[in-house]
Amino acid sequence: MSLFEPIPEGYRSGFVALIGRPNVGKSTLVNQLIGKKVAITSPVAQTTRNRLRAILTTPKAQLVFVDTPGIHKPHHLLGERLVQISRKVIGEVDCILLIFEGCEVPGKGDLFIVRLLQDINIPVVVILNKWDLVPEVGSVERIKAYKDFIGNKDWPIFCCNAITGKGCSDFLESISSSLPKGPYLYPKNITSEQPEEILLSELIREQVLLNTREEVPHSVAVKIDRIEEISKNNKKGSNSKRTAVLATVFVERKSQKGILIGKGGSMLKVIGHGARLQIQKIINGPVYLELFVKVAPDWRRKPEKLAELGFQGK
Image (cartoon, rainbow, N blue to C red; front, side, top):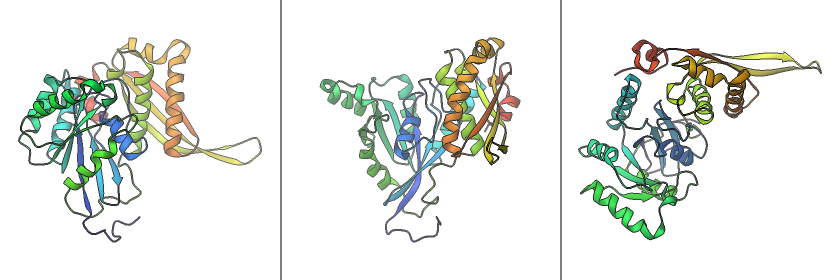
């Protein structure tokens, strides 16, 4: 699809950042809006580490959603770099989706983000996610609490459930109309700008988050070592091809390595099986996945290791 095809009159396009505390549902919302999985999700806070661009093309606008790490008080160098990513995005987009957990009353972490956005000159749309968890009898009061919380800002408020999609279409028109008039920024059939190696490493890390104990997930990083197409002759004599993916999973302590591998390699098999099923959907073909686990002590605090894993500084 060419970027130079005729543009509908009055068409709009631009970048939309999803901003909020960790685990408010930013990545789930991106997947729901795009209509397929482009970002990993898990119940673990700070799942998102990379700045992901996901593209939604409608008859009226092309919206490039920028999913960001949750804004939080960092406890190590990796945390500092993740917050740097989110704060940098704020000055580079045309609109901001400020996402709260609507099922909770606003707190100090939310207030920090609101103050961060108070002096910006771009449109902000407030999303109260997880709205299905708010009792109907208290919903009006909850919306009023958030209106009072954001103060005199003219920020429209919408309620939704990012998992089911209920209410998600309601704010697309508001976002689209806030974007500048402009051409397609990406071909109409593109839904993600995620490099293949990053996407595959994230799918593997997602399975670690979903399957291991609480002490492991934040200490895990995944690096893709090699991706190559291999051929194999089957019993019928014909040649079949599949994609081989070799990856290293880094942890910070030997005890974490033991948890990740499991008794007789059982946990690593579960992680590998789940990741392979997800990767096959992306590659659209059979996949051979081999995982190695290595200990890199305190990697989240070491600039050289962060750089090797793709977490650059300012």
